[in-house]
Image 1 (spheres, rainbow, N blue to C red):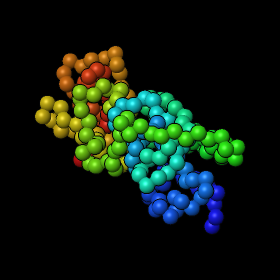
Image 2: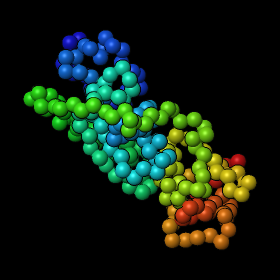
Image 3: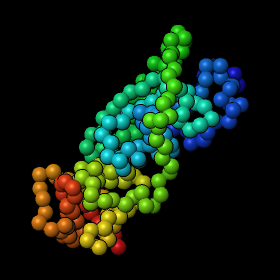
Image 4: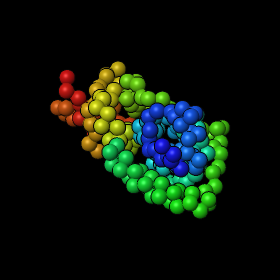
Length: 208
């Protein structure tokens, strides 16, 4: 094969040097964050966990370091409240497809202007572990709601401790910034209402 350019999206393997050097116009990767923030294999998970409302897509040149190559094009996007992981994937994929088409056109014209990433502004997150599904009542209810909604496809339960009581949550129903409970939580069957900082979250407990 003698490709002029190689395009990948969220590819899970780092290319070896021989492959990186094969296409004369470079290897390009589509990454679902605004690099240099959220480098690593699961950027959407961490953006949901950190409560980010602004995300985006980056098309960058690949090198031997994960997600660290020069930036070619970026498209900022907002994450709506309650968006699921698959919905966010689709939103970012549509934007990423447009970036790839634009990049190929600019490559033909030799009009792409790569810019180096600032490593001092970079953040890298590894694959999530079990403890990364823990939730704190010190979060806002909105952040907890969007984290659960955005990562529910992972099939894990979410752990939260309230006044020495440990709860395992399966899914989030809604949140409110206007209401305040008169106690830390209320349990009605499998439905758990929790006071956060600020706001109240309604969630469903996992089956015992």
